[in-house]
Length: 409
Ligand SMILES: Cc1cc2nc3c(=O)[nH]c(=O)nc-3n(C[C@H](O)[C@H](O)[C@H](O)COP(=O)(O)OP(=O)(O)OC[C@H]3O[C@@H](n4cnc5c(N)ncnc54)[C@H](O)[C@@H]3O)c2cc1C
Image 1 (tube, rainbow, N blue to C red):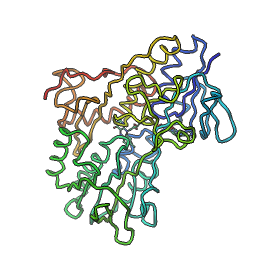
Image 2 (image 1 turned 135 degrees about the horizontal axis):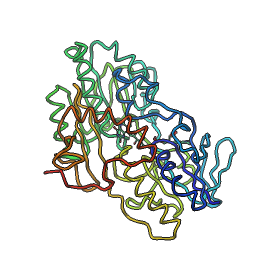
Image 3 (image 1 turned 180 degrees about the horizontal axis):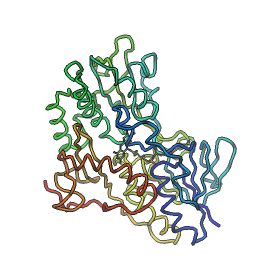
Image 4 (image 1 turned 180 degrees about the vertical axis):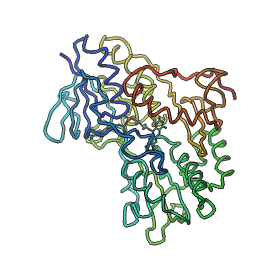
């Protein structure tokens, strides 16, 4: 038997294990997945926890329950990958052999890299919503936050789901309006980018929506530190942005074990071929999802589009065929805009989000770069799709490759 080993049983690792177990055992391969715990979090749901839309325990499932019965699940902290001996070492001393390795270790949040962030104000007036604990603590704080300045802050790119902080600002506007507190709470969105989002057209549309809702946008902020005494963000250019409640998206890096194995760049992200998903370190090591260094959104939808390419390339690699350079940077994402509506963006590495209809050209039902109730219902339905189709490795009704059909400029 030969061994396919997948590191990480999050969105990408679980999906890949379930897709590949349908094809590999008949070719004499086993499929094993490793993760440190048994708590799979539906991360898009983290956005809605602070506003009481989802309870924290409603967005988690045991990892093993999401894996096909023929996938071997090993729970343990990954220590390092030994490329020469083709072994993965776990912290408890376990060694796992591999013939083919898939890295799906996602990102690591590094709030301690910002001086003052995790000091005495952490979970008092400073929160994150990218972790289950952070989102749950923030829900408690938001429910009693009556007046002052709420600052939504992105430290630096890349971050996973780059639209999530924008969505948070829109949802805060809705939540505070619903609870009759909006006139007493100012909302500021602080970003290292030169606009609301990374892509110019979407940035213009989203920036206009922010302005219309009285959300102040402060751009080009390189965060140096948090002044705990004053309660402000201090930028390298000397600007100070005061807050009463800071909701921050901390610095992201790749998994420490990736760096320790010599498989990462300076931030421990994995240098990866942008079209084939083979790592640059070794031909028998592939990577997908948030752990790569690719200049595409770190999003579950991207991991999904990469998954189809990677299944094909794993089979080609095993069969000694040339790899297919099929990944085109396709990404899409619902953007919650509050008041029961959402937008949808669909884009690729080379084409930015455009208006139109999706997935059926001219029909939809989803509207691109335009708010609609249908989009919001689509975002809520995505939770069911995630658990039952996406991580289960089943087909979704979206084209793997980006297409211009149904879009207009
Ligand atoms: C608030 C929020 C909202 C989001 N909204 C959306 C959305 O609307 N649409 C969308 O497409 N995406 C969204 N995302 C992004 C999406 O959740 C991620 O892009 C996706 O989960 C990436 O999958 P992954 O498998 O690469 O990483 P993950 O799902 O994070 O999995 C990585 C796994 O590796 C494991 N691991 C890492 N290091 C080790 C180690 N040393 N030992 C053992 N195990 C280890 C981790 O425990 C983890 O389970 C959102 C994310 C957040 C935080």
